[in-house]
Image (cartoon, rainbow, N blue to C red; front, side, top):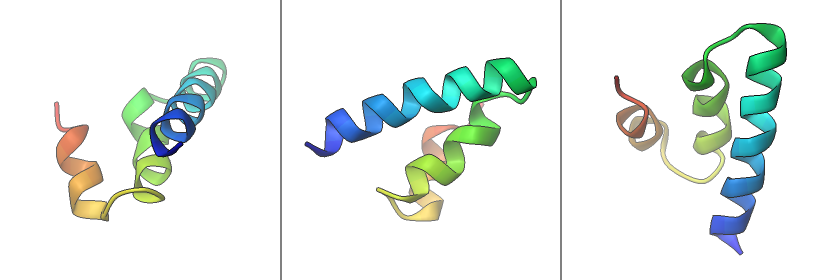
Amino acid sequence: MGIISILLLTVAASSIGTVTGFGTSTVMIPVLALFLPVIGARLILRP
């Protein structure tokens, strides 16, 4: 269930990021911080 939630939130965050002009990582850090520690979320999205 957790993976499906992350998947759905990722799709929503990517859509919002595309419409508003923000990068995906800007929107995804708060989304992933709901499920992972903040440091872990930042390391996943590191360019």
